Amino acid sequence: MQVRRSPKTYDVCIIGSGAAGGTAAKVLSEGGLSVALLEAGPPLIPARDYKEHVWPYELPHRGAGVGGHARQGLDDEFLAPNGAWEIQGEPYVAAPGSKFRWFRSRIVGGRTNHWGRIALRMAPVDFKVRSRDGQGDDWPISYEDVAPYYDKVEAYIGVFGTKENIPSAPDGVFLPPPKPRCTETIIKKACDKLDILCIPSRLAILTKPLNGRPACHYCAQCGRGCITAS
Image (cartoon, rainbow, N blue to C red):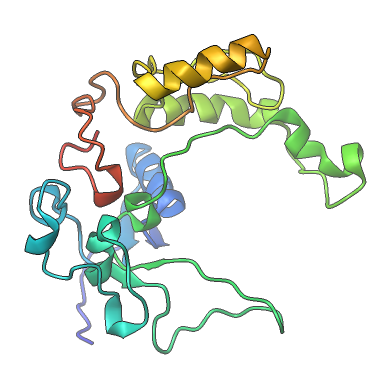
């Protein structure tokens, strides 16, 4: 491994550029601090690395996992060069008899590059589980403490949804949801007849341009990356 020395002194060093590290780097640097952000992998270049419009037979990896440890579906072909489920020399530490597997990203942005885009808020009751159910522990903070930060994140990344006033699924700062597809209208009509609540999911997908990013063009290839960063 090559060690590069720099005469520059930083105020903060953050290891890992995923959701937590990336957010911390953004906030601290915008606050005027000099931040060094360390990541084990390279940056993604959408025009080069995302393959959502490439035919399966043209893909370089065809779904093969790193080191032969696993095989990914074609929807995950961009994972192959950017991490693995199991990395040699870096095993997960788990309790005896238990298993834990999570994709180990080695790329700028970490797992934000391949999360499912489901963007639900925790509800007030989720912060008080012990008081409510007698299990686990209550959080030392409340939903009201976190809500302003939910607002900031949703306004920045873009989350679509509808305001429904559901106690277990708090409303947020939403973009309009996409128009329902044919099958979704059928399901919605059936739910209405049975008095079952049926609402659009809350997903971090742009239905309108936001912060320099264009709206989704509905190619239905979300699992293969997004060249437009929608």
